[in-house]
Amino acid sequence: MGALTLSNVTKSFGAVEVIKGVDLEVAEGEFCVFVGPSGCGKSTLLRMIAGLEDVTSGEVKIGDRRVNDLAPAKREIAMVFQSYALYPHLTVEGNMGLALKQAHVPKAEIAASIGRAADMLGLEPLLARRPAELSGGQRQRVAIGRAIVRTPKLFLFDEPLSNLDAALRVQTRIEIARLHRDLGATMIYVTHDQIEAMTLAHKIVVLNAGRIEQVGAPMDVYNDPDNAFVAGFIGSPKMNFLDAAALGQQGASLGIRPEHLAISRDQGPIAGTVSHIEKLGSETLVYVHAEPHGLLTVRLFGEHDFAVNEAVRLTPDPARTFHFDASGKRLR
Amino acid sequence: MSQARTSTRRTIAAHAVLITYTLIALFPVFVVVINSFKSRKAIFSEPLALPSASTFDAVGYRTVLEQGDFLLYFQNSLTVTVASLFFVLLFGAMAAFALSEYRFRGNLLMGLYLALGIMIPIRLGTVAILQMMVAGGLVNTLTALILVYTAQGLPLAVFILSEFMRGVSDDLKSAGRIDGLSEYRIFFTLVLPLIRPAMATVAVFTMIPIWNDLWFPLILAPAESSKTVTLGSQVFIGQFVTNWNAVLAALSLAILPVLVLYLAFSRQLIRGITAGAVK
Ligand SMILES: Nc1ncnc2c1ncn2[C@@H]1O[C@H](COP(=O)(O)OP(=O)(O)O)[C@@H](O)[C@H]1O
Ligand SMILES: [Mg+2]
Image 1 (tube, chains in turn brown, green):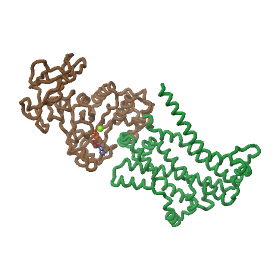
Image 2 (tube, helix red, strand yellow):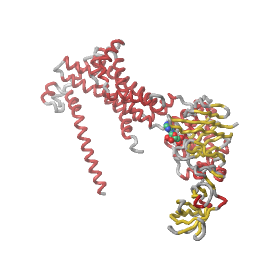
Image 3 (cartoon, chains in turn cyan, red):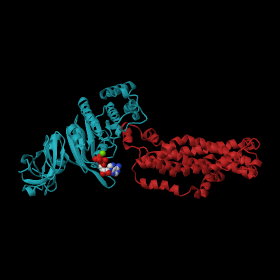
Image 4 (cartoon, chains in turn orange, brown):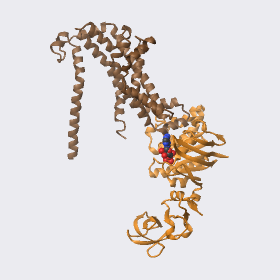
């Protein structure tokens, strides 16, 4: 039995169809990440699971209960928002306890739950403060604490790290992963950042324009993409797409990741000129303009020197190429 | 550095303009108040002079206060204004919340319909309103005035408040729904406190025309028991054509409650006007 089952779920706002038939099963205890570009419908799908948006057609099941017509509060879920969404008039303690208070849980039990959650996230010193007196990172920890207190069947996160600065983002990401291990709860996490998706997920769901492009474990999605969209979206820097015909290969385009493209000054089937070079210390990114493929990225480990406008030649690693047809479908 | 200096000069110019405007706006009020403390002779001989020991005379205030009804008029005005204000803010905010929060058929049309009242003055319907009040047996009651003023204030309130409601974080309302708050709790405890500045703005814009109105009290509630201050002091003019002391004193007194209400709202109002300036 899955913790969450979506069967042919669609959503329309007026005449615009935003979610175009999604089927998905999330297992008990799984960390599932919805990833996709901005505006592809990730938040809408999550809000439908939460009950904040009606389902136009299809079925949403949490556990083995159909929840299409159930109010959000009755679905035994908790949600963490990008904008934290703390109640400004309540203290941290009040924020964390509100849901249980609404459910008429005895006071002592509420206090114990808040104590446990505060302990997990190191929130004890903040319990008496109001949200306005907290920093962004602290606010998001309180929002996560508020979700934990409810001991929900399903945790929903909507881009919870997007408002935090880079260092805090990494730290909070690790904290969320640790929480997932400690609680063993089922979590659905929405992000547009494929690094967050890769580092947190058991299961990645790649969404594009209201459809699921691929579902799989992070390394499966990375190593075995079903189509050009997934291949281009997962992995950083982005995969290069070469003109297959120009190389005498099958299909319309040939995908190759930047680290699988060798660069040299004198040999290789693809000729081009260096248009830009980025040195990051541990790695060097060389941007090469090559006709008729366009701008290609080459990723080298360690420090390397190339001059801008220098003529170079590239060699793709034949074992690491992906072939796609004109519609972007993978040819295997 | 030269830029800093021009901006100082500009600040001075802006202040000069604003101070001039303030003086012009306050001048009539000032004249009313000083003359209310002068004897009748002094009012006519030197209308702009401050009251001195020889010209000071509180006869106007004595007349007004001895005229026992005047306290009742005051009470009536206050009841009508505060009650109308309460209903305008309550229903206006609720309608604005529904219009901005829920997607339902005819949402846009309903919004337009409610906003129509901003452009069409309610006085055009005076005859129909009077007939309705007669039929309902509400003539010469404060209820009649409260109903009319609530209707008069609602369009602008709905219009302004729904703009602000749209700005309230969706996530906050969603969080409330997930935590099991009812729509009423979400409205009263989460949304209303966040739009307090807008509410204060609407309150001031609504309150002043109601307090000052002469038209509806004269038509709907001219009886002695339901007279408002504005109507009461007009009647002073009719009865004691020459008793300027009483009229000026009544007007001076009528300023006080508005001033108190205004001060109560103004802190919020200023926040409302400058909202967004900081972010
Ligand atoms: N309440 C709404 N009314 C109309 N369109 C909406 C509404 N909410 C979202 N959309 C549209 O649905 C699409 C998906 O939005 P969203 O789920 O927020 O995307 P994401 O979270 O992936 O960035 C967008 O094109 C957006 O314009
Ligand atoms: Mg989103």
